[in-house]
Image (cartoon, rainbow, N blue to C red):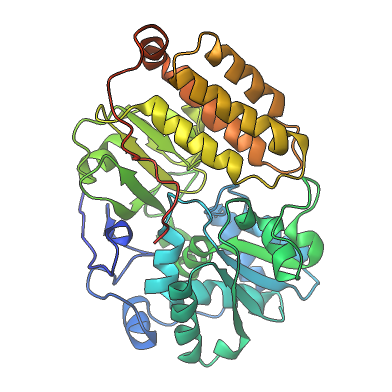
Length: 413
């Protein structure tokens, strides 16, 4: 195992390091930002790739989206073949615990633009729109576009940073001038002639085009080749964005992140799930699925015995309820009730855990979007894991630990 520490920029949460050889984060150990020249010196020129070659590379690699859903990128390209779509880079990163896409857009924007423009050329797309919610990323992408001969095809849009506003269909509505709210479960971005993926997905595609299918598969697992990015935070001495081979055991990441005595991890973000800090858990989509979780938004938050985990859960659940679209019963009524249940449990109210689980089951699968489902999964996975702590709150007035706010809910960098 090798690790390298990147020089960062302004915020320690966006420091970068790697386990194994850097690919997407290549060059960031030596440079705060990769401009056009440094980008080419680091990665080399991007080979031409028509639609047939792109699909061949994607089919061989099985490259999936590095956002929440993990949808195969090849399927999106096939759904839009024969059209002239708009290619959208979703850099809004509404997950408050995640900074990985903003790190890419702020520090190595050319790699993201390489992947997005390659797709636009292959599909004969009209343009590439980069949607971001923070001014620093917008400025970095505009500067990068001005350095490129194909940069006139790039448009940067500032969008809402709200939690549900980063969902693909909500983002498409916002870019079309509508409200930044999900329209419903049955609509997809491709239905509107839009190919949308997050910043890391396009950066990984640019790496795949350069390396080819065989070299790309030199790392990772047989079924999930390549690397992925995780934003690591919580009770660690080395927070930041890490690039690691898919399938890396959790224990290796915890050791490299300087997690002293990890007890619990939240994997996948706030639509993800809670797990005991079992070193053997493999950090891949299939590995986390086997553990009952999801890689989701590429977030790994560590909790130790210094904080009240039940209190952390209550804070995040209340925030998720407040961030809902408010356009259906589960969001307007179910999630606030669920937040009250978890708070009541923290306060030692008898029966609160059973009521919370019942409310979670009631909202799951019934919302106009996936926000109630993700919130229910987040809460139920925690409650099943925190039974000892729940007992202390119900029978002894609490666990005796403060709520330190190790799970961030605001103050995005």
